[in-house]
Length: 119
Image (cartoon, rainbow, N blue to C red):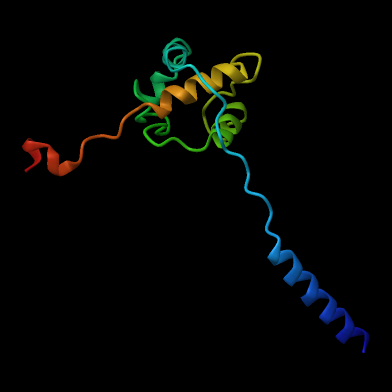
């Protein structure tokens, strides 16, 4: 009897939790200065691994369509591979926002069917 009561209680609790989903995380990037972000991106040598437009190379592709700002900032501060960590002492939060703003402005490459040489 106790087992049946516990089972019913768990079912009711799971239904109540399912009806009230957790709020979505806020992945909005803080306001950044695109021109300053482009300057910092070059000055800090990001282009050496990620390319001048963030297209990738020895390092991961950062643009176009960068990952969320939250993931970008977390990985920049605590990378898992060969990238050195850029702590807040090296790159401020505002500078990260500026770099991210620059990456958001990188346009998509042209569609393959719009390149005459590839036709």
